[in-house]
Image 1 (cartoon, rainbow, N blue to C red):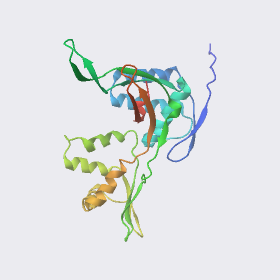
Image 2 (cartoon, rainbow, N blue to C red):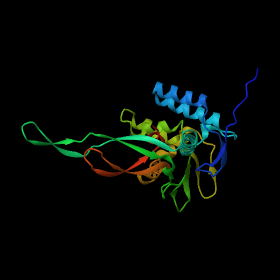
Image 3 (cartoon, rainbow, N blue to C red):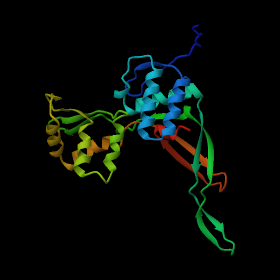
Image 4 (tube, rainbow, N blue to C red):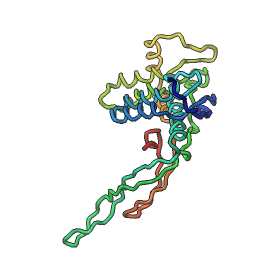
Length: 252
């Protein structure tokens, strides 16, 4: 006997990067299972793959999850979380304020408070923060109008960026990472897309330090999920304002 199916509501959102409208449905039990198994596994690749699988399951439009930018993926998952479980999450913060602690002999010493403060946080307050200087087009020579157009990192390729600050990686390997994120090179008359990796590497190595820094700074200006919080430690009463960025900091 075929059992009846419960109707699932749908909703629409616009992607932060392109403004494209897509239709979603909330998590079902099978998606909750995917997330729970990934959290239990604990590896970054497990969680990454779970997020992508959930988005594939919950979208109706023809979108390629593997080619979506990081901010699009994180925004979609954030909206799915809100529509599926509600907007409130419980976050925890460790107080690192230095307080005076009295010792048995009467002396007072400086020590970290260390108290864990729990806070109910509303995910609806999270915004997509796009720095003013963010631009995928980077002009390297204004007179000749020579420059590059960058590819925003996808969720799969975003983890490569960790290698940029990985001191165990060689300088050559870290330089090589930039090649993956250059879409094309242009000048006043031509767009260059049909080049080899070696030709692109030679182009990058021929740049001045100033121009190389322009490309490197692109990764410091990527759009992010962001929210500001005011926290009051329930033990020492110290108050602080912090900014949270990135999907991983908003999920309980």
